[in-house]
Length: 338
Image 1 (cartoon, one colour):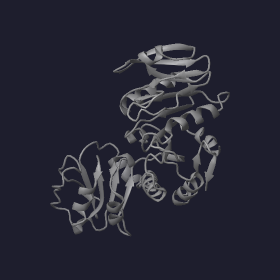
Image 2 (tube, helix red, strand yellow):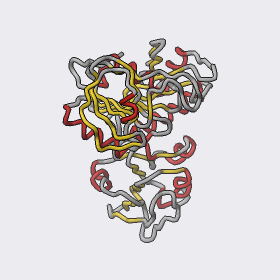
Image 3 (cartoon, helix red, strand yellow):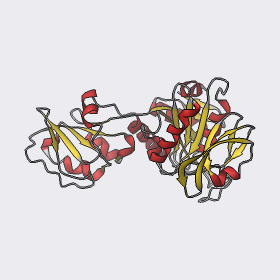
Image 4 (spheres, one colour):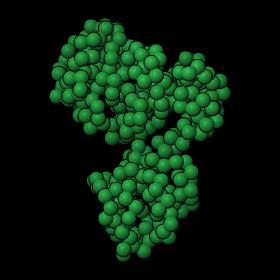
């Protein structure tokens, strides 16, 4: 697949599912079986537990993680002992999980394994930093339900998105919902000046006026809509350090100070807007941008849901690909849109 060639250009990649049973683990396995291990040194881990034979929520069968010889991995002590492959134990990491410390190993034979890596994005970044000593060329992280923060550019340079019938059983609805997520992932970077100004700000909401003077609006986060705009006649740029929500957007839309404002967030994982709210805010004079972004390489679809609904794979791939202007793959049918 062409996206494998694109993937190996990056140092890190997250594979993220928009819902359980959208084919994320199958996509993960597909990628692992096709990476050029003779040219690249690969490491893998997971946020949460991945590789179970049965989904713990839906009780449906799940594909197991299959590693090839030579792949480095990080998993908990418990699941390292359960592995069905021969491995070299390289070190016991200081990174701890509820299932024990993270074991760093290298597969000596092909086989199956449960991956249970660091439970937080901060822990994941620490583990990835540890792996640098092994001259890893590409780290691939398998995501977990509702952990879109895994796809943050602070964790990985690139990402693959998995969607499908489990996310919505209606093709049009599925395309609309997935396309909006893709739109958020692909938001423009803000200016270099803004990146320098806001990059080290960790808390609060900050504004830049028409004279390029920065104002602290004295709120802990956008969850508080009691914004202090005293002394601010016009807001050119608004930096929201935390979550960007519908309530916040709907509140500032009522204030003419923000009629021509660029809102800047750290990255797309901080955006919690409905399409309606986003579209009502963004116009010719208002926009939303990011400090950091990942490269979305491809979208993979699973046209089958756990309750037996099967969507038309070719129609889904082509319709979604047309909507997002990116390759879309059903890895089982090998159908490709775009």
